Amino acid sequence: MSKRFHIITYGCQMNVYDSRVVAEILRRQGWEEVDSPEVADVIMVNTCTVRAHAERRALGRLRGLVGLKKQRPVKVGVLGCMAQHLKEKVFELVPGLDFAVGPDGYERLPELIEAGGAYFPPLTHLYTGIHPQPDRPYSAFVTIMRGCDSFCTYCIVPYVRGRVRSRPVNDILKEIQGLLDRGIKEIILIGQNVNLYNYDGIDFTKLLDKVADMGIERIGFLTSHPKYFDMRVIEVIASHPNIIRELHLPVQAGSNKVLHRMNRGYTREEYLALIDRIREAIPDVALTTDIMVGFPGETEADFEATLELVKHVRFHYAYMFKYSMRPGTVASKWQDDVPETEKLRRLRQLIQLQNSITRERRLEMMGNTYEVLVERKSRKGDEYFGRTIQNIPVVIDGDVQPGDTVRVRIIKLVGCTPYGVVSG
Ligand code: 5AD
Ligand code: SF4
Image (cartoon, rainbow, N blue to C red):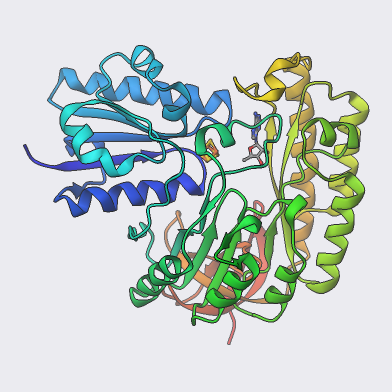
């Protein structure tokens, strides 16, 4: 049998990274990755389960792929968070599926592809020694910790990703050095809760400091939890010009009642005080967030409190969602009492508000010059696409190459995206 595989990835950066881990494990066994499902012998879908919608999409995609079996012999498997959540039930939902593996079982994939079946080992694994190759030329994710202990009442992640565990420092540094040797310019350290990193007394502050001194052009990290945020991280950022001036700090809601019921571990006032201290220390920081509407018991007044918070903080960008009941979570025992039409109305109103703030923030960039790391050709063709040190996307007109860092003067907005020319 020829050994060509293709992976389709849904979900967050953790999944993007895990798909690279899978590719590396299979490559070591003589498999070859192909970039289209049509020419693959094995097709895998790495799935998300954070909202019901993510599951519906993944199940639909899997059923479509299983349909390919009518034309030619092909094996189809499901990986990741939805597989872990549904376990063996996934074989009933997707008849004809060959194998299913949870997020911590990928080292057994070579056998499972051969024999079929399911593998859901305990959620304690770290993939130490597996250093995946990134699928983009200049930027790479590096997982530093896995799992989550926060147990927000709406969230399924702790159940499908397990408890917090940190990767050995040396393994992380070795992986990063390998990426630098390959010409990677930007490293994003990732984990469900990077603030909780701790390996043998090396905490996240110390790790970030070490990584920032390795000679990397840019370093970022995701995601921070406001409850565990350690101000010493801010000192490390302030003293390293190569650390991305963007902090992703999910707030989720603006009402104390809702924050409490979500088990977020902070109040609105504490969150705002944190933001003030961060901005005081790093005035040019761009803040991004996640916000949810329609959580059980969220009243119109609670929702107004979220809008007020968004107006007050003026985030550079926000990821916004409707609450989706997830089986097994604490909130699933409460009545999902905000009607769907009302959730949708609140979401639309919030998105409209945030979009206008994002646009205002980007208009403020007009006429200014920024250092932009060029990532790739823009989708439309002649221009290039890159990011400022605040991680703000920019379209560049000029003679540049991906991987370059160039000075760009912003002259207009195209939609919401700043557009600039190379200057000096
Ligand atoms: N419903 C809607 N959104 C959710 N998120 C997590 N769980 C749910 C859920 N049950 C959102 C949160 C989180 C982001 C990754 O997804 O905002 O920060
Ligand atoms: Fe990522 Fe959570 Fe979705 Fe898993 S369930 S892919 S950890 S967002």
